[in-house]
Every structure is written in structure tokens, then in C-alpha cells.
Length: 234
Image 1 (cartoon, one colour):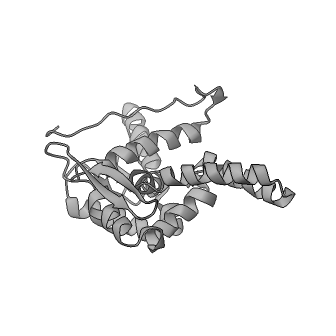
Image 2: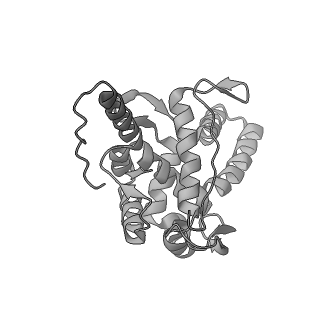
């Protein structure tokens, strides 16, 4: 509204992607993932002209392109320039990328993998190593190096804790406490007036808002539910 914005795309629930049906949770994950990119790459104050900057990422030895006034600039850049994969915040993210599972707080039985392709490659490599299949081992290791170079870029590292925080803040704080604190502190400091934090996940806030609307339509008491500080909401 004041010079900065972005558009994201996602796949509707039960829609198809590469021939496979998307569950509601998978659809939500892809939407929050793309929203997370916009939030972490965009201007922190929500204003001004968008600019780009580059830096050498020690986590993968490559140059990353990030938003000049973004979360990636203020938080990820100094971390990745100094310690790379050795920083505790980066270790949290990589552990989540490789073996984590995400779910909605009100439905822990349905889970989604943060990086299905990465998890699949790790599983296949483990099987090849157990079978002693040297050609396959070399092939999977090569593909893993390439994929990890992508998942350890600043935009991909920052988006995983962000979309989990949007989906399930309690789980985000449990699995990635350092990153959760960084996200909340940085956006509180930015104080752009458009991004606010609540203790309830975004999905719950939307459900409450819809329920309040329906309640008003039938004349029920529409008292606002209490929400204290703590996930991103739009």
C-alpha cells in the first residue's frame, strides 16, 4: 500500500500438482511457504522501494541474493556470513528440514514433511549405503549436495521457521526456539503496522473470524476472543 507488496500462488486443497493430489494440509503448507518468502524477503517496514543485495553464504559457499531491507538482510545475512551451518539457529532449521514434521495444533495426527524431496533423498541414500550399492550412493550424494546448496540458501533457511510459525507457533517454539524468538523480536522491532503477532496460529484466527461472522448473522453474542502477543497474522 505504501510502495511494497507481493503476490503469491498456491494449489487449492484436493488440487493436483505433478499428477499428485494435494491434501488440505499440504495446500496450506505451500501457501504459508510462499507467504513466508514474501515476508522474509520484503521490506521490514512495509514501505519504500524494493532493493536487492548479495552476500557470501558460508553455509553453502555461494552468493545469495536477498531483499536489501528484509528479515534476510537483518537476521540471516550476519548469521550466515559469520558462522554458517555452525550457528545454533541454522542447526535448528537444518534439523527441521531433514527430519521434522509439521501439523496443525488441533490435528497432530496429520503431518506434513518440511522438505519431502530432501527427506526422500536421505532415505534412498541410507538404503543404498545399507545395501552397499556404490553407484547409487555416489549418485544420491551428488544430488544431496546440489539440493542442500539450495535448502541452505538464505531465503530457504528463513522461510521454513517462518511458515511453521504461521501454521503452528507452539510447535515452532518447540522445534526452533532460537528462530522463533528472532522472528518475533525482529518484526516487533520493525513495527510496520501490518504484521502483528498473536498466541494463536493463523488458521485458528481465520476460523475464529469466520465463526464470529456467522454468529453475528444469526444474532449471537459476537464478543471478541482474547488474544495475547506471540504468530504472524494478516
